[in-house]
Image 1 (cartoon, rainbow, N blue to C red):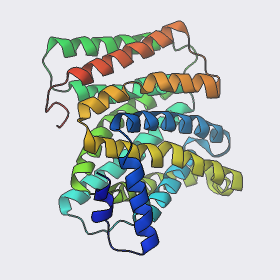
Image 2: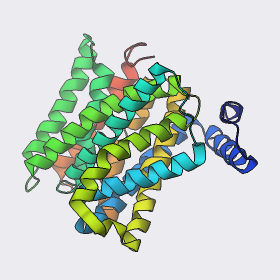
Image 3: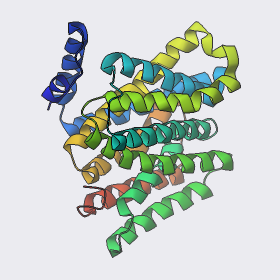
Image 4: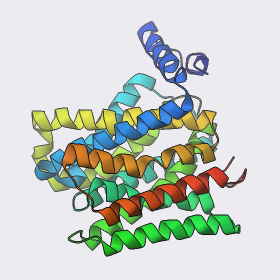
Length: 306
């Protein structure tokens, strides 16, 4: 699989070819389940780090920094060619817009809602992808479990702002679309070039909002340094790993592995941000995890685009 990155890369100087080959060998050598799990941990630690910037540049400014640096790194590594088919361009453009919106809504929610709860609600998007169009009673059971988790979160939300919950739900809609578009991106592009262009388009969508919200605070050296770290942890590493994993495993298997994300987010929120969830909230998280894992595991071939 790693040779795909070398053989299909655009011609260029030897250092770039060597960098692409190294990236290909490194990512390709990792088993797909480990790729997904590493991406989960990376993105949640990155989200916890990003929350430290909210007081200085706000949610939109943090997203702008994350996407800008992620796009810069990916463009530097892949230097994508614009010579793609019309179909590929449509997929890449859709991927970029959804990626930008997903990140913006996620960080707007994170400003007022604990990390574990944001990810739990956001995870309704992938769950909907897993059971969409199904008429089986078992998939109805998974939907009821997830609904029960959301009800528990609503009942036990305490001082959590309703707007934050709605932003998390909007991020979930985008996340479901991201999974479908990510699979299509893997089919229509040969390497990380499509991801790099998509990330650049996401930056174009979000950057004006972040600049208007934060102004010159975005240029403070420590803010730029933390923003680079957030970009690497929350975008470059996990999206690259997820895209590669989606090339090698069915989306339903990907969905089962990703089902761990709400629980990982809650644990990262507890350890890094000292966000303590109550018993009812933990039960809600576990219900959504169980529903997503069950729905993804029992999805029939074709339900998720396989």
